[in-house]
Image 1 (cartoon, one colour):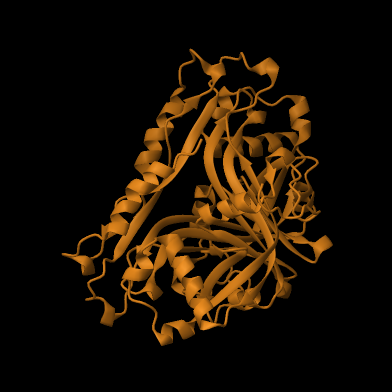
Image 2 (tube, rainbow over the protein chains, first blue to last red; image 1 turned 60 degrees about the horizontal axis):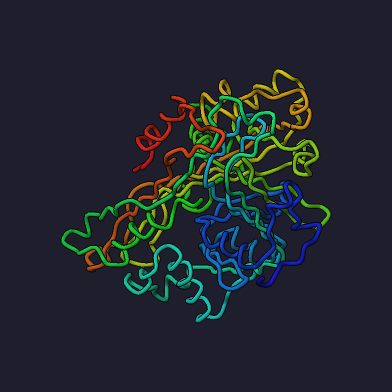
Amino acid sequence: MTKQFDISDRNRVRRVAKRGAYDHKIVFEVIDAAPIGHVAIEDKSHGGVAVIPMFHSRMEDYVIFHGATTSRLMTCLASGALVSISFAMVDGLVLAKSLFHHSMNYRSAVVFGRGQMVHHDEERLSALKSLSDKILPGRWEDARGPSEQEMKATAVVKVKIESASAKIRTGGPIDDPEDVKLPIWSGVIPVETRFTNPVADENSNGLVTPDYLAQIVSRQAATQNRP
Amino acid sequence: MTKQFDISDRNRVRRVAKRGAYDHKIVFEVIDAAPIGHVAIEDKSHGGVAVIPMFHSRMEDYVIFHGATTSRLMTCLASGALVSISFAMVDGLVLAKSLFHHSMNYRSAVVFGRGQMVHHDEERLSALKSLSDKILPGRWEDARGPSEQEMKATAVVKVKIESASAKIRTGGPIDDPEDVKLPIWSGVIPVETRFTNPVADENSNGLVTPDYLAQIVSRQAATQNRP
């Protein structure tokens, strides 16, 4: 068993507690697999909350975001206020005999932490590379690197994961014993997310599709379709 | 042009404002297409916020959720507190010549509103049917309907959409003029989410796959893969 997040009133999975996980490894796998994190912040000017979808990566126990230096969300994340981040992917529709026991297969994680601006140039570059690598390994080395001007326009923020939990459902429907013989189709419809063939733009006429790009479609096809 | 949400300091799209939309129709299409809504609430006991992924549907200008009557989130949603809900789907990776102009194609929406418990039996059934229809049209009529006991155990909440905006990106990379001739592959890798073949469980041996189920795989395949 790897390191665990402490279970507290804040991160404890309440509904169907057996699906909850606090293992760093499991939580981090969900964060890494999710294409988007939904970042919730206090919205003091309106007496409530606001939640915004953001592209993210992870380095150790930090969630990484980048944005324009002028961005309000970046400023809020850098302020050290407590934020929460939600990640979720649907892996299948679960059709039971009864409507009541219909469900979904999914992987999700909820994170609590505080952000800080990343200032050090080397760390900023590592964080930006982690975002690039998350989209497409190999791309960082191939594309035109950031200029001084571009680096100045880019804010990088890291949120320390102080508390977190994952919640994951897999498998088929769980029907009541008195329902299992009903002549109603029950089972799972898997949901698959994958890359399809890259579409070159007009500025790539005559250029060979790089290996890291050509491989991603077949690799993705092989790794998707979870149980 | 259909009805618009008023643009205020709360819902105004700040970054790349031209990608923002306030049209009811556009916002509602994003909400309907998203499999999951990420619901942010104030977490007063911890002096911050919490955001939780939830399955949802939409009826007119309400977002519908259901859960156990004992659920803390349901209680909070029913309290009338201001909440925010985020929806997002990634449609493609956008690879520019420069790392700086890398992007994603996506559809997203951010909603602000207040929840209330749905009490009236007929309205509760309509809301539950809208959730079932969102998963799989035809299923509500086929599966074993909810018992009185099951209805008692289920809380249904609706959040009135008071303010909202959508943000959508489509199309290829937008490179700086001085970069377009660089011999670096640029273009889009489309991302596709689709159902694959239904997997019957052991209680469905000998049952014919219903039409609404057989059709969904081919219909999904035809409607995915956006530009």
